[in-house]
Amino acid sequence: MTEAERPVPVTYAKQSRGGKTYGGSQSYLPLRLNQAGVIPIIFALSILLFPQMILNILSAFSLPWVPAATEQVNAFLNNTIIYGALYFVLVFLFTFFYTAVTFDPDQIAKNLQRNGAFIPGIRPGSHTSEYLGNLITRLTLVGAGFLGFVAVFPVGMQVFTGISALAIGGTALLIVVQVVLDLIRRIDAQVSLREY
Image (tube, rainbow, N blue to C red; front, top):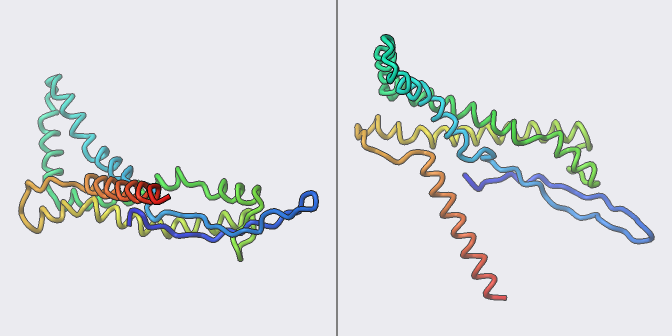
């Protein structure tokens, strides 16, 4: 799921310059299923743990309301069902937010049009931008569900097994998978390099 992508076919128009014909080739635009990576999980954890961090800082000032607020926040964080549900929702929303910030379908449509490329069956310009926007929204829906599941999976395992010492988190799991995939890619590159 971390490497899944949806290839969007792109065709480059033929251009004649000085009696020579250029272009006319076909390629594809790879749209990743998980455009955001692990960033939404990190954002969601930061938002969930921010009140606890602020209360820990405020406890140094001996304010009278801080112990009661700390107790309320700790009670909330210890309720694994509510914590897991809020965690899932935050990861889901941050995935859409981060993808919207980093992926600009208008800019991609302009770049394709400027380079003489188009998506077959889609008109260049605003139609291409709308098509890419709809496509990335559908892909992000699946990617956000996947990230939310990976983030909440350890919490769910703690609820079902009753083992609270389960330490591996969704972020660590995704990072380990990315490192292993990168290692495999590098080994394949070295093997193919030695064959030549």
